[in-house]
Image (cartoon, rainbow, N blue to C red; front, side, top):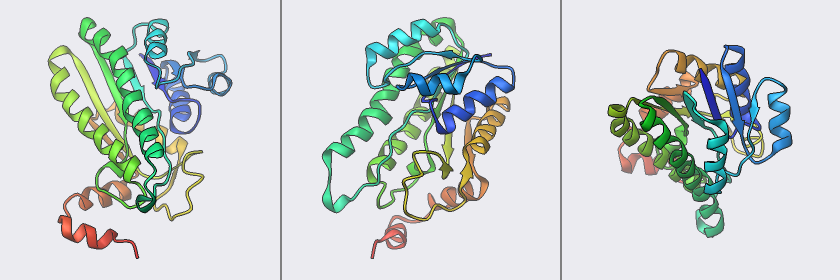
Length: 236
């Protein structure tokens, strides 16, 4: 089984790449920082640096990687947001990486998979996409869009032999979350997240949500009425 992981220079992507190699997978990894990728890969992976926001670079990297069984979108941008001091540049950067970057990867991967009538798209979104949360207006909006997009793709591409899996982690200790100054309940380590994803892929899961306490909490949160949710999350 050959995997291409985009966003694998650190955090969940790096740990997932190493976990899949341990399980016998052939892995290609991509991100912007070539040195970090090489450190993750050692001699065990194909290293293909790219900037996911550069469509031409993504298409060229796809040609270099070649046919794969599984494409994993793991790149992402996060910065805490202050809605009262709206920063259009920060919001735009979330869109640029989390949505337009994903768009570029899908543009490279889907036509090849449809042509081959096989393939598996895996998108790492977040439980932050389940409900709106203060401080995560930009990040949460892009993650909600990813969840919706992947759900639509699952329905549209199944007749072409292409599978789609949505991954929604809770809080995972990574360089991205190390800057957070707010409480992060049910935090797990990146290697635990990688094992949860790899296990879910082996079981052909359509949705992978972890850790379990966060999965249950956020699934229940989706059932809370809008007015009650607004009261619960109101900043004071």
